[in-house]
Image (spheres, rainbow, N blue to C red):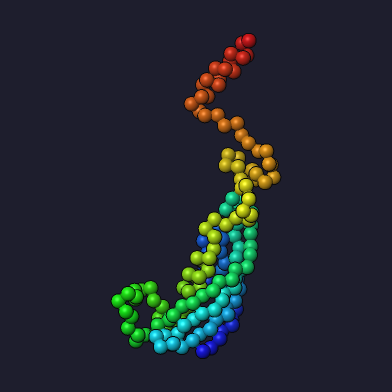
Length: 161
């Protein structure tokens, strides 16, 4: 068994549309590499700083993410059972293991699909884009276009009175 404590730069595309780990930012790996019969078992923790924007109000947000990882890398000559899909299994290739796909799977699945700055964030007005947090009573006169002609007729009647 070996332990690995490293700081590595984040690869590209380590996130989703609104939030993720910025490329080149520092990722801390605290891993154990254990030799087992079938291959190398990698387990431990990944620490990274996540940055993005709120899905409702588009304010920037940032926080530290801690993710547990565990993956078995099979030796090259090991036969997989019928239940295990060869494409889904990680392999030791030329005495090396590629941790990037494991990190990507672990980090991206822990990111929120719709990140928010606060659970009660009101977001932006869908008509004019004003931040609803800044204008609590904000609203628009919403007139159904099918009734617009009737509204014009009512205005005309009021002006002739």
